[in-house]
Length: 495
Picture 1: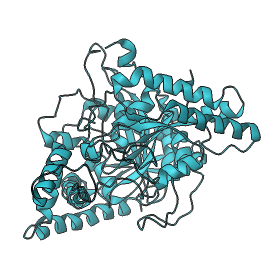
Picture 2: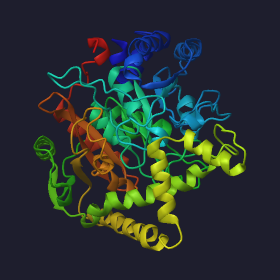
Picture 3: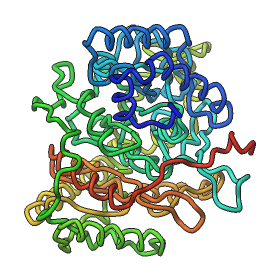
Picture 4: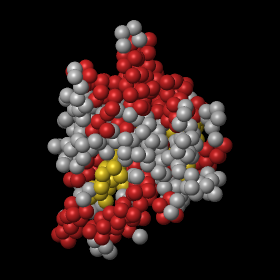
């Protein structure tokens, strides 16, 4: 089935003329038409005529022998990346009708590599959330089901839940995501796919709607580790329009997958054995350790003592930056305007009606910690702790090559579970936030199923700009696990 291929398999099939790019694109558009009404993975589906025209151009390139690395491959784009002439909403009412006149650097590079975009994927509003339930366009449904509970709707994780669900359900071969505190890795784990957060600065942020500028980073969401490497090659690279983008060469990431990991030192952080960790997650972690040991890795116990402060620090720094970034959406400069009798009234009404509850909460938190009298007590202190968290990782990588941890503290939970308690929801990111705070690369790899048949992921964290080693270890873990990526679809089951 064409919608079940990996990027690598599809590229090989297109090159061998086993099928055409038009057939591949049409298969994905048909799957979207059939399944998206239930899953709600896409906010905007690109018109069929435009998709097929791009696919026909790809077929012409294959015929001429000028195919590019991502030629003819159907890709979903998180609706946080500005796409020229295609609506970009950030899943918010305030941008419900925004059509950018420009292309983000990441999506422009994917187009230059030959990708065929099929739609804009759903997300938590302005990327704020861990369950994809805060979108102004409705929640996304995880295509996986619990055994014996087929009618229970599960969350896909967030904020890149639409991208994760689309890739898992066969509505795209791959998709872009953004990761601020785990928004690529956690939904990848919940949906049984691969998610890579590159080093901060590896991919340009230009043209990506900002949440927390010192944390946001674009990355690939794919079915295999090799696919993540292939897609990152197309997405990464220096951009003079982004002052935080690193001017480093882009390695052949995909070639790192399959390399021997014998002799690599794998660190196991003591602090990630958190109280209340699910026995199934713990057992899967131990299995991952055993697999890497069998592959020739040396297992080393390490300590990241400031990890315990990661979540609290994140929920000071990220809302502070969000408060600043989202100030521009006032109905005057940007955003859908709500008219009122006074200018203050326009601001108040526009923002009250345009932003959802979670976004308003985070803006208020951020404004509070930045306010006079609290800046030193909260924001400045959080920045100092962030430096200590980063130092922990740097010191750990003096002893080891990568770290191995769980990706999330549980498998996907049901819509409605944990949602009354925002702190409990924020704990979903407990294992992913520290790597974001430190700016290091991290990869989530699906490695097995829990007792209810839901996927579980393990996370590999590496040194700054050493995605190649992360991908090598991820490939070894993937090969040992032999994970099957096909969920039982709600929509297919008629749930």
